[in-house]
Length: 297
Ligand code: IPE
Ligand code: IPE
Ligand code: MG
Ligand code: MG
Ligand code: MG
Image (cartoon, rainbow, N blue to C red):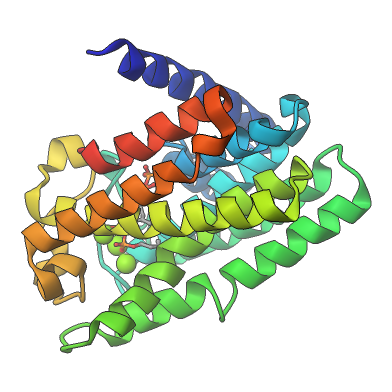
């Protein structure tokens, strides 16, 4: 393994632990009444996961700011928010998936009723965790406004909506981009936007990082679509072949595998060019962008 890869791996592990500790501290204990809901929440949240969105927030913030400890509750909020979307996405009425993060999905273990509530709770927890952060009220309001915009029915929910209604249909690339941009891009965008707001980045830097986020967000979902075809269950931690089974509109289903990979490569190359102006400070974001292309899970 190259030294760069080792550096990235160690840094990802460190940040993951910080975020896990923050979420563990925030959440009720497993045995608190009513037990089943707390168990269900913790099951999917701590089953694994790359913690990509907190990582993006922390490193975008570190381009501009220094007090990382203060923003950990916001990083934890992003992961709880993301995990809510996964629990609901896996439900029988949406993607009907049995595996997630290498374990049985929340509804398989606890039932769809409890999984629905666990997702709801995580969404609310995310808001509460942002509110608990020791940052000034004006910044909090800005974060919450962005939160609603990105995750609401004109954001992530819209992406999930069109994803569902496009199953089994021949859609054009414009619609596919709409799905990916919203269902996946919005949360990645939110992580980066939070980093810029908290780090008080200039308008020019915020715009530059928005473009970085837009590019890695689309590349991320293209690779997710490719991994659904090429990945193996053990490494991936979720069942491959599901997109084809459910006749999902994906990049490879419209453009083929080779063109999809070339598109992802180009997006990552363009994204990395956006980091050049930050020099050494952006080294981890740069490694991460590269990892998004080569990842197997
Ligand atoms: C999976 O996201 C859902 C998509 C948006 C494609 P991740 O691949 O980041 O999932 P975890 O958090 O690592 O499990
Ligand atoms: C999930 O997209 C996007 C959200 C959860 C918002 P996918 O349905 O492609 O994600 P996986 O493949 O189940 O992780
Ligand atoms: Mg889905
Ligand atoms: Mg899914
Ligand atoms: Mg997928």
